[in-house]
Image 1 (spheres, rainbow, N blue to C red):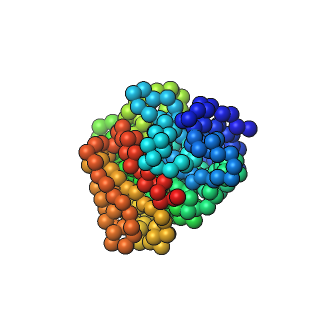
Image 2 (image 1 turned 60 degrees about the vertical axis):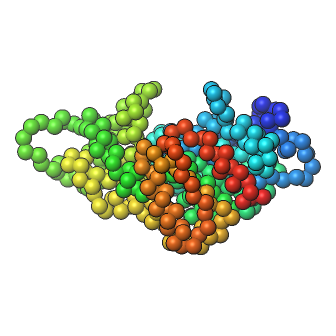
Image 3 (image 1 turned 180 degrees about the vertical axis):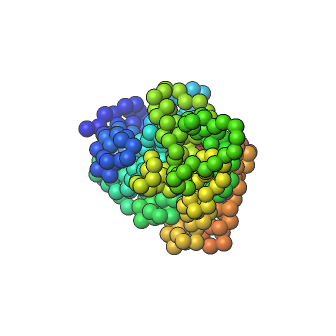
Length: 362
């Protein structure tokens, strides 16, 4: 059953409920029944005949949910308000917007399948897409369906354009994770320090010796204690959120049911040494390294948009530059832009990407 809200010339926000089969047995025990906000443009209700509309899926960044983009915002527009304005200004055509809730106990995911987190690629492509197409007058084919996002959502968009091109006709990647050696590696010392607070027993002076029988990449218990501590409180600190993010990425890029907590760690918890065999698993998911493998799929897309602030505090602009360079070398048409800003507060860039997607999918 759907519940309608905010019916006006600004369109309709419809709240659906979806029961997922692929998330039912996820390792984190996260909900498999979730609300799904869907925004219908004003033209949808004004044309109740046979007119059908392109669909855009919003992949929100880490710690976010689709709900965060439909909520009221102080001093700025939420995403439905932004889309309604752009349509009114005739900068983009009318589109249906879908806002999946993909939040997890690890703070989010990267919109790919992981035994440690859940099958979120399948959730999007095999469940939500047909579910939305059944509920609304969509143009139910990949040439009229796109996805976009920022940060982890931007990563999800470009990865879906590579691995799941049969579902998507165009993608927009805002500051999406790329060049993992820059994006993730620099924060692992802070993560190791945060996890060290949960070391048992506490480190004492004297010669250091490796813990017996602890395999490379395995948790000695501190990561689990850190997670349990975080799950028991309401307001994690910034340092804790960043540590959680790195554990989430480990669960995404190097999951294994046989490993402690369901995933391997890429750094030795005691010495800080990078475990190359584990880090190699991460690099296999780096978009910069995947262009050649998915050249055919990327060339099939009707549009690829990538942008990033050249003061991004996570250094993602270097990865975006390399990604654009690899696309250019492969002869893959795309639009790449940089702008004078950081990683934060850049939703205004959707004034560029949404019209781009609308034109590509009409």
